Length: 413
Image (cartoon, rainbow, N blue to C red; front, side, top):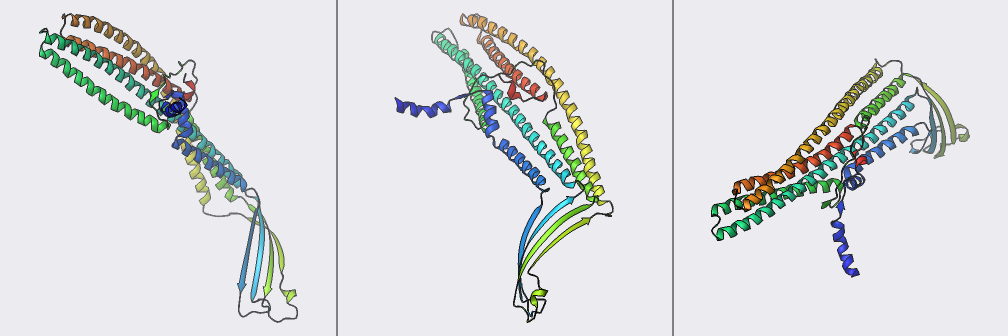
């Protein structure tokens, strides 16, 4: 028994049902594109750390070996030397500080890009999930219609054998039955395509789906979504890069200390070579430099970045206004879908009542098969429209939350 349980366990795992929240959570944790945005954010963090490290002193070491011929009193034949240099900028006009702030804003922009991509991916998963649910509902309705047609076809064939129905009646039902079978196969293909897309996005072996819905929206507040935040951080980064260029016109003061150790061989004959050649030396220096003229080169570069910043700020305001427009429209869209849902529900009830009345008359020979097929088809279409509208309403709620600047995942029940 234990061996049988172990053998069936993988099959149970493959047939596991997944809810919408589980699909989105797994997607956020495992989707390769999500990982790509995370790696990009980590890269920006390293750039920010690198810019911060520029405030520390630098230590360089080096060495050299040279051989010359002929040698002289002040030029030995062989010279081996090594050095160590410590250097530090005492003042750079605020250039390093501006660059650190710029890298910080670029890092913030990358974080917002990661969040924005995750939200967009959530929205795609929601659409794929309810697309599958729509097709499953349609397939269920078609199977139900097929079952009804098969039962009536068997009944008509019995009547035909008794001389109570014609071959024409049978042929019409067979034609509708075969067309329904084709529609079923076509829907199955569309369903498998939608499932494959969901598997690709989520990384899960999706076969069955649990029922998931969104909370009804109440008192949802608006907040700008990540696109406008990305634009703001990018604009701020450009502003700091402009400040870094501006600092190029300020004095640049550098402190440097170099210690050199040397060894001399193949010396020229001399009574006092040690007094002439030093085997070690320490040199400390302070240098000051300042750009006096470059025909406005750096100033024009700074102005170019400032114009780019203004352009991004203008685009940011447009994106916020655009989001507010979509937020208002998505709220009205929900109202429209609610009305459509009520209409679809009433249509379904009417179609079901009509079908039940017609099928009794058809079985008693009071109506022909055309009336029966119309009633059956209307019931199937009404059921499909109702289910489609239900799932359309759930997608509408996810879009409403998204346009409000929220993560739709947080509102799944």
